[in-house]
Length: 349
Image (cartoon, rainbow, N blue to C red; front, side):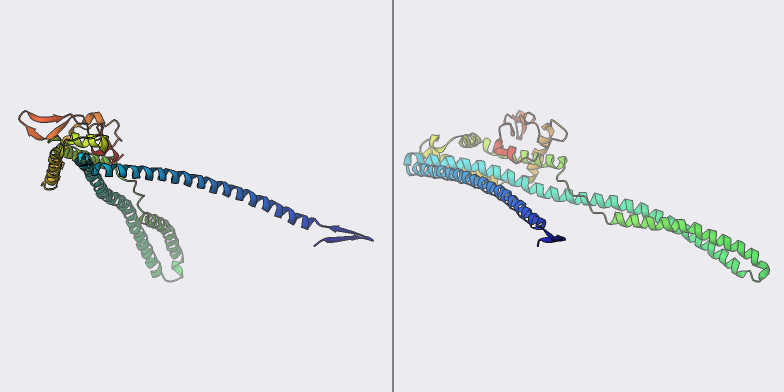
């Protein structure tokens, strides 16, 4: 509403309030416009990103379809069908061994994390209990001191009460002075006791700090076992020369491989099946893995004390798991450098 200010016959109307409301609405309109621009830009960028992802996925899908069509052609041709089967069975060995090592790392990590987390809580509780115990000792000492003051005061009060008659007035005053002095002295340990009890309760209410994850020692232990399993699987397939074929299959394409005629391919596939069955039927695997882990631990070296993965060059020559006539056979395979079973992807850092 306009305001009227009357001066005699003149009337002055002020529209300042309406003007203020109009300016506020204009400012609000500009703010909303700016926010809409920002939101529009965000939605446009998100749309472009989704379009790029969709184009990428369509390209991958088209590539997969082309590869599938190529595989179907290879399998349909009698001259390449068996070679293609061998190729994918060899690739399957690589994936199976890599999966075994990865699962081993995952399982060991869960067990080790649980153990270290429990140890973390136990160490905190132990330290917390030691701190609380110190406060309790101090509290007990103060309680003893307070009881001594209570006994002294009670004795003085008893002596004072025994003094009857006005002629003992001054003696009673002396006792009362001593009693008052004793009560004052007793107040100090009482206050200290309350303060100590408060601090003790605060300590008892403390929660363990957040678990920061596996220790370097724990990660190293898991990595050494993973490397031992990697080397064990390598030797299992390398003894018959199968590892070279498996490795070559991971670096090639099915259109470019040739393992021979049908009989030669069937012979390879039969050997692959035998190796898989013998691997699954082996006993005392854990004991063998433990011994191999100790051998790898003996040669593993690290660049820094906080590193969890050994230097690749330190694993260039690992004592074999089987004894030969001339002693331990030294393998030339480098587990990390040669990326055996892609172990470098599962090692903990």
